[in-house]
Image 1 (tube, protein in one colour):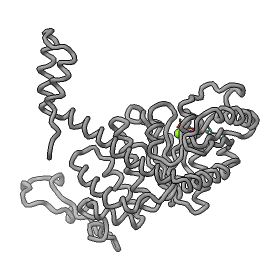
Image 2 (cartoon, helix red, strand yellow; image 1 turned 60 degrees about the horizontal axis):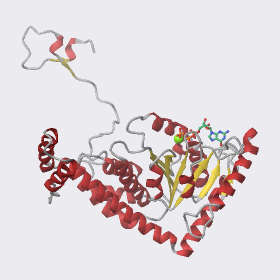
Image 3 (cartoon, protein in one colour; image 1 turned 180 degrees about the vertical axis):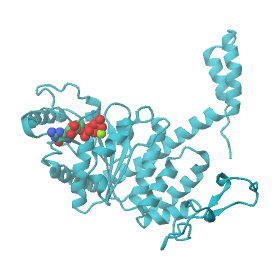
Length: 371
Ligand SMILES: Nc1nc2c(ncn2[C@@H]2O[C@H](COP(=O)(O)OP(=O)(O)OP(=O)(O)O)[C@@H](O)[C@H]2O)c(=O)[nH]1
Ligand SMILES: [Mg+2]
């Protein structure tokens, strides 16, 4: 548009102004879609009802927006998120919730990628959620996970959500739970909650799932080095990974050793001895066996009432951890506590207040906000 005749000079432009003051009128595009029309992107962000309705009809974009809402740390979003969760709760729960853990590098992401694809071939819809206690500090692993699940991520029947960031593990736990309910309401019937097997996060995952699958590496072959007893005690199923190529034999040996170790443990799920299997995410060996064991486990839990009891315990645990989190949050935001703490600190400095007396002052200043 170098032609001067197409330049539109604004009225306020000085008479002797050059083309730097000009506006240009661009030609229109034939058959363009009016993106501002009411049928496209809603101008206002969708409210809880609209989100609930959308995700119940399986709209993945609205599911993603709903998850963003429950993950928000902004206090003004909390009421909306609570309303959304209330609306979808009657539609949640129709799934099997599987916790997956194992030491770094054991092959969790690769396993979920190939196993998840198999489950989809069987007609399931698979949601993968991650709990990564390190994510708020070190975000690299999340990006890594995304790329390592490259087959699953392409399926419309899969939904992968990395760990919510920010806050204590308690907060992450709540967000992951609520995300799980949203995914269930959107029709996902297999929920995989992945965590790195290095800390407290396994207990959180255990408390929100029906079954806990522990992935293990074949060690040097003749010992259980590096395998924490605590984590084996909460497992319902153990799989020795990377049972392919040269590693097949060692994996078989590790399976036998772990099987012996499991016999000596009190089972986490009454009446169920955790099976120990081998698998390979590369060759696919053992992947179907794992699913078949899970179906047997579910049958056992349904027949004995364990399934229902565990679901109740999951809700109780959710409420309890929310109560905990709400109290800690209110306590740390309380102006009365802040004031009492200032006074108590001076008292400590001047040697007038003992630690128990200071604690009493601070706790007594706390009033739970009523609105
Ligand atoms: N041979 C073989 N290699 C595997 C198998 N599964 C995973 N690997 C390899 O093991 C390495 C680690 O796999 P990941 O799936 O990233 O392990 P991870 O447990 O998710 O690791 P973190 O997320 O870092 O804790 C990768 O190089 C994989 O290619 C398997 O079944 N066989
Ligand atoms: Mg991983």
